[in-house]
Amino acid sequence: MIVGIEAPMSAGKTLVMTYFLISEYCDLRKRLLTNYNLLRLPSERFDVSTVEAYLERKISLKGRAVGLDEAHLMLDSRLSMTRRNRIVSYFLTQTSKNDINLYYTTQDLGMVDVRLRRQTAIGVTVEQLNDTHFRVTGANRFTGKKVIDGVLDGSAVFPHFDTHEVIDVG
Image 1 (cartoon, rainbow, N blue to C red):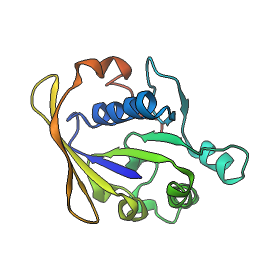
Image 2: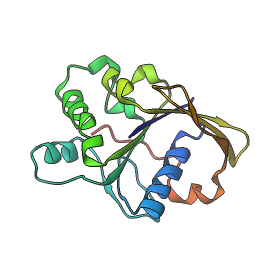
Image 3: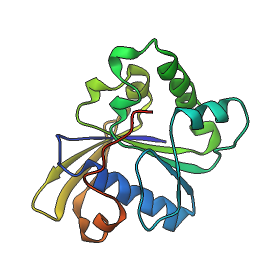
């Protein structure tokens, strides 16, 4: 399943994605791959070299949960024909066959590659209500049915990531 989390800068996108990843790890015992540093949780680095190793069958990513913060940095809509976009796009088409749940954040869906947008099953939006509370809503992109609607208290999630981390585009 691919879940896209869209909101303006500093609205809580990474917080919501981290919450989902914590749930994947604690509830489903999935191993985590991220392109940002998760704190207090075991995770491995996700970048283009990870995808290349997977495609060359050097590593297995079966049963993983992937967190891709600021997805437009790795899958920019303006660079759809680059080798990097093609490699990562191929990986995206294999996620459901390999029980991989992918979560990504972006400030605007139009900034990410069209292939990622088309494969996104759940679209999530985030609205910051105050310093610790965030309204989270999500709908199935294919049916329009609302699947998430609530307020997240981020107090327990903030210690698991650095809100000021700059994402490496590697």
